[in-house]
Image 1 (cartoon, protein in one colour):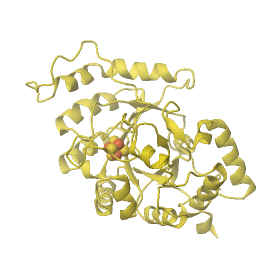
Image 2: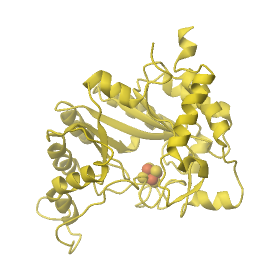
Image 3: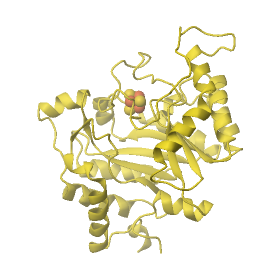
Amino acid sequence: MLPYYYSVNEYLKDTYGCKMYRLSLDGGMTCPNRDGLIDTRGCIFCSRGGSGDFATKLSIATPIESEGKSSSNMTLRQQQIIANLDANISKAKERVSNKFKGDSYIAYFQSFTNTYASPSYLRSLFFPVINRDDIKILDIATRPDCLEEPILEVLDACNKIKPVWVELGLQTIHEKSAKYIRRGYPLKTFVDAVDKLNKLNIPIIVHVIIGLPGESNNDIYETIKFISKLPISGVKLQLLHVLKDTDLYQDYLEKKFHIYSMEEYFDVLGNILKLLPANMVIHRLTGDGPKSLLVEPTWTANKKYVLNSMNKYFKDNNIYQGCNFKK
Ligand code: SF4
């Protein structure tokens, strides 16, 4: 029987026989929800780091002199990112060296929208990374409206070398909430992207936020039931975090929504686990916001305590993933 939930560590051990560590990398991209193509304000909860505050920031050997295009059709910044890729991966490995002693890594392009660039740049960025011996999986966080055909061709080519995961920030299926958070695309765009990625056998990880203003617990369960029927292989569940310098912080100051207590969150999580298919890989069950920016919920900052309490709660309440389907 599967444990209380099928964690990504268990999945990696079952599939690849070893532990892996995610190296959070900065591909130097922005986001159409920030550069003005869709909006300039970004999603209401998104930090200035583009939800990638842990990413190893680009370090470059020489300063960027100008942003013009070069003969290779890449900006100077993009050329410098490519030139410094290996150095930045080493830096990311160094950062986790006290926590992880293995030699297998997931290259995680986390900040902003990591397919929001030309296919040729993405090839130049992803190919050297995926061809490294120490990188076993390429993990790309992006938006479903940034997966045009030429981009999918790049991902498909990478996926033929080593596994590629694509993370999509859905957050909710409810259009009213999507509008409030300024997600900037309709649900249909997400469903279409899932269909296209699935046809290429690219595993999809979906981000869902728990506790969005205006959503009831039933609204959250509807989102979970919806994604459970799609060909999605993993989920990242994130309790709504209020971070400094976000528009959500302003609404928080005006007391426009409720902040979940730890007990309330565990209750919702337990119900979600029962709804998720037993083979859905759980990549995240707690928040992951940077402590320096975190305003609420403050109890999430003690991650070890939260994880221990959560596992105890699941055990005490006999909660395990997919139990509704097993009966
Ligand atoms: S799509 Fe992602 S990077 Fe862009 S504004 Fe929203 S959360 Fe931030």
